[in-house]
Amino acid sequence: MDRPRLDGKCLSTAPAYDWRVDLKVEVRTEDRMVFVDTVGEIDVYTAPKLREVLVDLMADAPPQVYVLNIRQVDYLDSTGFGVLVGGLKRARAQRSEVVLICTTERILKVFRVNGLIRVFPIYKSEEAVLTEKKWISWDRATDVVVDTEEVIMGFPVWAYFADQAISRIFTGFLDRMLNAFDLEIIYYGEGRFRGAREVGVRARSGSRATTASATEQSSRLRAALQGRPVDLDPAESRAIALFEQILDRATAAVVQIASLMVVKVDGRRESRNLTQPELRYWFYNEHLKSDPEVAIRLLRSPPGPLELRLLGQDRSPRLRALAAETLDILEAGGYVNPDGQWVPLTSASPRTHLRDEPLTLQRRHKRARFEVVNESTLQAAARMGGNPAVLGFASPRPPGRAYRDGAQSQETSLLRASTLHTALAGAEDFHADADAVLYSAGVQVFRDDDGDLLAEPYEISVISAVAPSGRAAIDAGIKRLLAVAQTHGHDTLVLGAWGCGARGNDPAVVASLFRKHLAGGRFAHVVFAVLGEPAMTAFRTAFSGHRRTR
Image (tube, rainbow, N blue to C red; front, side, top):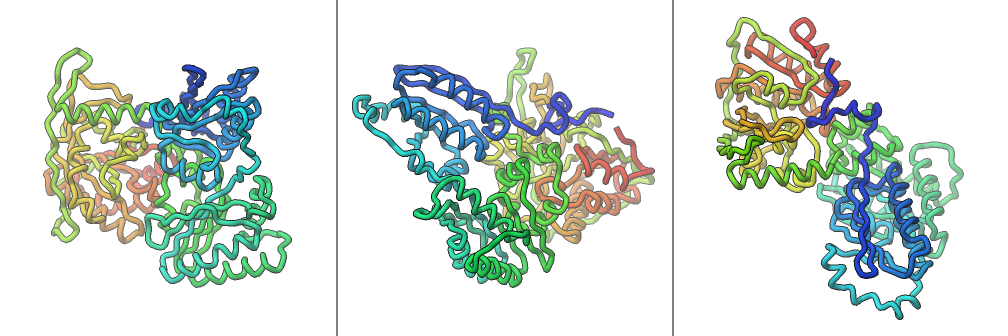
């Protein structure tokens, strides 16, 4: 059996279930300023590397400015923040200063949550730091002392209620519950979804305003919400009882308090403390917090670390570079291949099929050949040859920042390797209708799975569809996208575990519904390109006796 691959990168080259993303650190100096450029993620695994660099730089060093460039840091956990605060303390102890360069809004938001926005000077670019260099006057700076004990590490609270009235009740109650546990709100933001709100929480000022107390109190609060034994005073007990009453009245809700996720859907309830890989996944996919059906499935059947990586949280500098290069190629209308020849590219021809368009699915062949293979979508399409119709696991939004930032998904893999981006970016009617299907003919693939440019591109047709949730909606969606393939004359398909990643659909349900609509010889050759478990087992089981596996 082939080893699992992700966008051409063989996962087995790393230790089993190693979902970690490395941190690259480069140091340079310029006129009493030390620039520390970081790329990757700063978490419990990589933070010691940055700590070691900072300790070595500051050992017996004269007063100077340390500029930490974290613009290309995709993820920063509590361990990473601890390293930054520790570096700040060491620098100010030797009468130096630490400034940051950061433009990533989700990381800046956490700085606000933690109160660090008041402590670190933060700039948007290196040019801005150099321009404002006059802010440091060494004679004056050596007399300035900032008490870093005022830095109070906090944690986020996210609350989504399907009913707006319940959401307003919870919003008014939240401050009371936090105060009962000696916690307070320091950052308040409106979420992107109806009924969703996010706040930042820390230890209440004037009580036990330290990092340790915030951590201790949040642990007690999470334990109480899970019904675990914890000694509560009367105010804390009343707060927990009121929270239970609010949750009982809600039909659907997702509440996150630090690492605790509480989900309720139609009388079903699940709560669990998330692991570090899971927190990372939710961090990159905040939209899941407003989809209680998906959230409760993820809590009950959490994916393993390898599956979490396959689900799309690996945002690497390499993928960002490939995305930028692809956009340049599309703008230029071609590329120079490895042989030094100019290869022109033509644009794909998109057509949107809206939900109310009548489509039929017919039997056209006596027999159908099925394959369930451990390949990427593009590997399967290249092996099949011809012009297969390829299912694209579409995002509800046009390709934008996530794609340019190096997000990893089945759709972004297609976008980086082909001319699909132009078709999707201009399909406003497709993105306005969640049940629509976009058919893009003549998509030219000009990269392989390793990201290398091909000597000659090959053509595929892409059927882009947003995976719905719920058996009935998935059933209708599969029938619609297969009918679109037939409408455009395709007899060969490359399909996959549609919606079994970020959408959290059950692979067994999706596989059985594909089997239902493909039975009876509707297509000559169908390949399911499936990476990772449990999806592979589910599709093998559904097509047992009618398949070839690799």
